[in-house]
Length: 278
Image 1: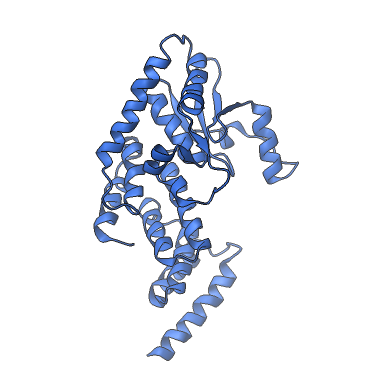
Image 2 (image 1 turned 180 degrees about the vertical axis):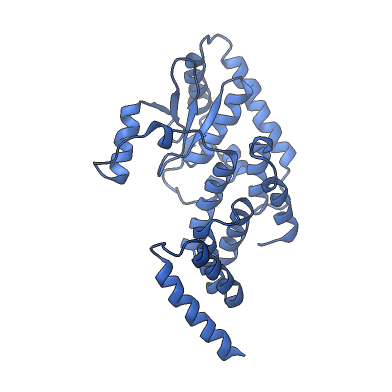
């Protein structure tokens, strides 16, 4: 699963400036880790074709608000893209090619479709890394429009506030600049990869989990929590030296993290185990 050639393709994405990342192709490069023969150009053309169809559908809409609502109708009613509520953890929900083929996805991949098609028709659409549920936002001159692509609906600020309280507790307050800010391309790709990593870890598929950890590391090489998680995967795979390196780097970067003491003990046990093996 950790194919050097496929990893190099993602490395080319990760080394670009954020503004230079083509999200369509980057998302398809992620999918190519599962589908090595994936025709990235063909699926990029599928997005462009959706854009052309949407352009015709939105021809009578005037304001950005009208166009945003009509794009929702086009994608989630006419084209029948929808959230996969029955099998939310199906990894196919995270691969853009599968989402285009099956018209099923999770919040981030459906938001990505809305973003990519919306930009094609001239809307200023960004992703929003809302806690627990990725959203899209159409940036407007008068007001921003928050789109939940998983349900194909528009959310008010009050609805966002209630979602936040349900997730984080009744005392949580909605901070517009924090909770509804535009996500960077790197943040979007990392969140996609993190979803795949979590699915693989839950399935105890260590090889796939490592593949996603490696790609996250290319995007954020000094993220301590990601180093910790990769170390845990390495440990499960019996790669104790690699696990120790990641754990020690995690402890160097985040000595006060709540999990640091447990990782210290884990690292010490691994050192003892490696010494016994030699």
